[in-house]
Length: 142
Image (cartoon, rainbow, N blue to C red; front, side, top):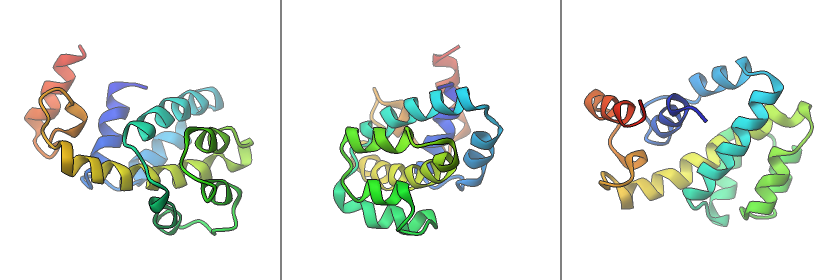
């Protein structure tokens, strides 16, 4: 995952941007790029430590019907194996899976953000409303 994409995800998690820029980014990717992104995104989600209690809120926030395949899989729990099954769904389920996982990520991220905010060794919990902070992150990875 590119640093720009990670920053976008974290801005989404902090409520700075809506899901639309991320959805646009995802739609513009080819299948191989989407698969790679989803694998990286799964790692980011797991770092945020989602809880089973987050499931219903994630489904509701995604705008998806609870009977859609990604939602029924998520209802089985947020462990890594279930989330892997979601990202491995067929092509016609990929966008729904992405939307659902975006919501799960945001819920888990916000909880962690409150605990870890501005942790000196975890830039992904730095306040990204400040452009200087964002520039500092880019300089760390250039």
